[in-house]
Amino acid sequence: MRLDSRLTDFATFSQLEIPAMSKKTAAAVVEYRNIRISIFERVDVKNGKEYQAYYFTQTISGKRVHKRASSLDKAKAEARRLIDTLTLDRRDTRVLTDGEYSDYAAAIQIIRQHPGATLASAIGEWNAARKALGEGSIVAACESHRKTTLKRSGYTPALVSAVYDEFIESLERDGASDRYLEDCRSRMGQLKNTFRGFVHAVERVDLENWLNAKKISVKTRKNYRAAAVTLWSYAKTRGYLPPDQQTEAELITNRKRTKAARLATEIGVYEPADLRKILEAAPAHLLPVFAIGAFAGLRSSEIYRLKWNDIHPSYIQVDAEDSKTAVKRHAPVTIALKEWLARCPRPKDSDTRLCGRYSAENALARAMTKAIRDAEVLPVLNGLRHTFCSARVAATDNVKQTSREAGNSPAIILQHYVKVMTRAKGQAWFNVRPSASASEKVVSFAA
Image (cartoon, rainbow, N blue to C red):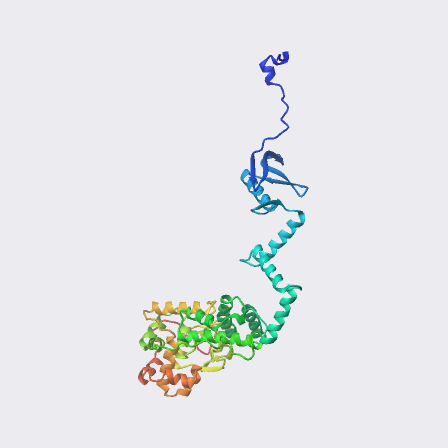
């Protein structure tokens, strides 16, 4: 074939504009489940900048669907997802119609609300129910069964979490103390987080296993058991448990205290010499805390809530809402306590809490334990209060007075504190007073 004379010159030939091919070459092809999607490459221009792009077009139910991605891998993944939606399952390559696709998407949304269930299992259960029921509505049959069950059992099912929320709301509405609310939220909150189902479905063995898994003392175990009994009893009064039966929480057995457990719960006390070390080494902000615990016998929780205006020249007032027994009492301000408090300047605002710098009781407890160790004294669990009760009953030989001042029953004083300390040692405890050579500033107590 003879070329045109214009093409004989190679330079002239190289300058000619050759028309682009009408058919584009695919950058990649995704073929899956007998469906083939070609991905093409192009350069998009936006705001004067060029961007590499990959796109494909597919017809779905008569409609053209365009997809674009910034990378080839993303485009392939998008094509694969599109193919997944176009097929019913891995064995069926038939393309879904608009109606079938809408039904499938709606069913998937419903089944996702029930973790662990699948669309196939749900349809299978529905099919079995239809066969068992015969004619009629499955929902109507379930409602009828529920009403019959409730009529026979006499209670309405409720989740443990719902019972907990109702109970806490009732306490807040009735004006329960902050201390009791805090205790209920702590112990019952653990029940709510552990048992996610219906309250009537929780059995005694479940509650006992929950308790046994905790590494707690016998006394603390009783407190947790009491919390469960209270919550389950409330559920019973609300009609969430059978009215004529004991609750599963009430059936929880209390473990017998072994000899080792009894020995572990024996009270410990400090020596008067230990107390002097603690008081003389205590940081300024903890000095009144240690002094009040040692010479007035307040519980750590009561000290944590104590305000400066609760401290009077001859007594410390413990309000009922701050007391463990919910009874108002006056703790004594002994001579030793008055002298140690005289070294603790009061703030201008007497409504200030003694322990205002601590946001929680456990934070105060950790600070006290550290201060005791810094004083080179071995910490004793509840040692200040135990020693006060033991020393007070030994020094006064008066059980009723000690029980009244400590906020305990006479039976508790007799059981735990009588004859723990001698009379001489009890008197020595209350004679631990600031040394005359101490350099701390002394302020008027009346101020």
